[in-house]
Length: 462
Image (cartoon, rainbow, N blue to C red; front, side, top):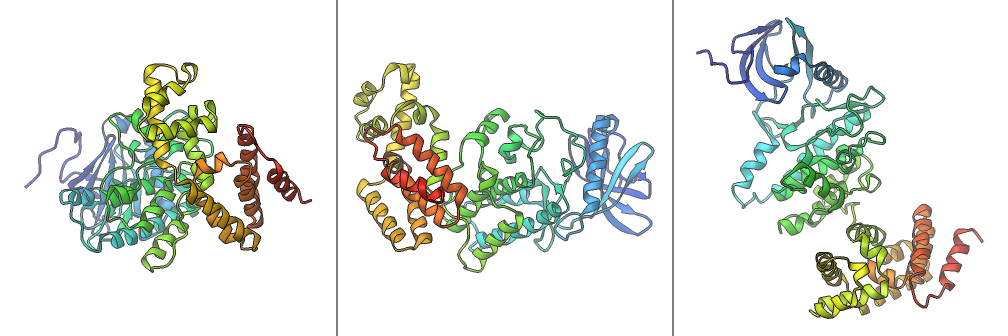
């Protein structure tokens, strides 16, 4: 029995012939197009026929994007990517004949079903690791052929009858070196899964690492059944993507393995240089987890923590000295908020609301501080390892020191850490840390520059 046209179907209907394809049933619909299961007469096979419809069929920009998607798909040949069989135009209708993936559901469908029941299968997280390693493999293939997807999200990952993933919908793909169809300042992608580079509407410097972030956001949702960046409006989501780190996945759901949480967090680093270098590297870490081997992802170290802390509290990091912060944080933590409030000059805190926000930040800061004696012990251990020539081990210990403690002892801890980085051949990081030490030493009331000067001579090759 012939199905009646749905609202918005336009001219498309079951049984309609478009070139050599006969429409069987609609299987998906977007803002500018629809996807139909269709019969290809010449080869007697079923395909997924993607069609431009509505105003998209008359919009030159959308036609160019449609053609660009066909070009991008035509470059790719990987079992984890939906293949293109043909593309063309018939009677003014633009179409693409794509591989029809059996199973009929997406990763988004799967996650929605899982969210209905808080109990997950016993092997769920290992299964998720294996699935995302395959997705990363597919995207690595695209990246090697200079194709950026730019819209990686759960609804664009099809799952077949054998539970194998297939990356689909390259409608926003960019072929590196090709003409950019989006203007600077124009957003491309789905807000919840955009990278910071996309959220900032940047075009220059956008590379394959934007897909790594988006896959990280998708992986986060698979691990926690919650999005990493929520918000009631797109602008609120963009703000969170640009400025707020999502909660640790293992804190959102207690069952998330620590290693998978670390892998996810590394993919979601706001600085592209701190993400995985390639999709291959991401897939390799997921497979290390599956093989019960040590993963390469590590918790944020001292340098990263300092950078993130400064981004969360820019006024605190620039407007107040370390000694003042230490006193205020201690007062806030023990509940002496009135005393802490009196400590903050009006000129620095601003309005009453701003003062309240400042005290809230101080409470957070105070709660994050580690025991002073523990920090001294860590520092002494790092120094002993450094003196013994065990630079890699010393670096690991230095990296675990609390940022606030390091800042309060910027005249010793930071130059020592910089020297350690120099000996582990991390020369750029050593110079960056030493520059940070110079700035913070200026804030210390009684700084001793002996260690700083010795480290400066080391880095200068003296």
